[in-house]
Structures are given as C-alpha cells and as structure tokens.
Length: 180
Image (cartoon, rainbow, N blue to C red; front, side, top):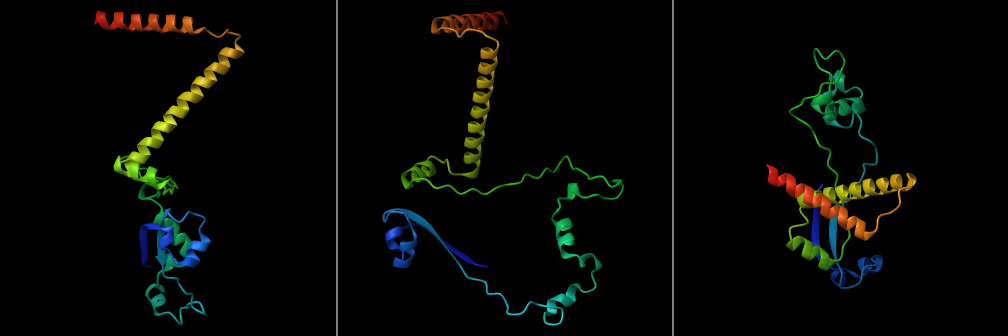
C-alpha cells in the first residue's frame, strides 16, 4: 500500500470539507497522510478461487497459520533448539530491543526551534526522556527519604544548618582530594 505524506500544510490551504473537520486555527500547520482504501473482495479467497494457495498446500507446518506466524516472529534466541531440552535459548551477543513509535502535538514554533537544535532525532528524544526519568527517580528517592525523616521524628534543619553541613562536606572532600 502506498501512502503520500505531506508535512507542514497550513489549515487554510486544505479543502473546505477538511477544514470543517479540524479544530486547529487557520494558520496552524498540519501533516496530511493520504492512503488508498483497500476494498475487500465480495467473497473470501479459497483454495479453489485463489491460485496462491496451491503453493503451500503441501506444507504441514502451515496448517495452523497463526501458530506458524507466531513461531516465525519469535526471535531466534527465544526458540527452543536442538539440545535445548525444551528451554528457551538466549543469545548473549544479540539482544533485541522493542521500539515504540510516539506522536506528540506541540506548537509550530517549539517544533521549529527543537528541530533546529537537533532535539527531534530519535536519539535526542530518547536521551531527553531518559534524563527526565532519572530526575523523576531522584525526586522520588528524595521524597521517600523526607517521609522517613518525618516518620522518625527528626526536626527539619534551618537554612543556616544546611549551609554549615554543605560547607563541612565540601571541606572534607577538598581535604581528601589534597591527600592523594
């Protein structure tokens, strides 16, 4: 199936019926995807009506098509092979990563600035998301510590006490660095 994708089309340039279906303002840019509709045959293909079936009629492993496809799509390291005693093998050298496609809606100006800064590549977006996840985990860890401190009945520190502790820790670190 062929599809045509046209990016950065102003809503005002679209045909009137299309504009009526959109809630975006007239000066907004959209992406248009045009695909040919697939028409289903009036009667399903059978071995008698479809010559392609003859190619696989003698294949016993394709009697259950769903099972055949499930086995075919299973990564090699997950298949039980000779000498595997029914256990699934795992090839340490080849690990497969499952990828997900995401679509986001952002303002055109934000998109243009992010693209110019190189932030819309898959690698950059993955790095940004991983950094955000690390920050979230750090915040969660900090909040769990705060809950434990409160549960232990330890009184909160003043800013002056915090500054004193930070200065002492920095002095200790500087002293250790100088000893090496």
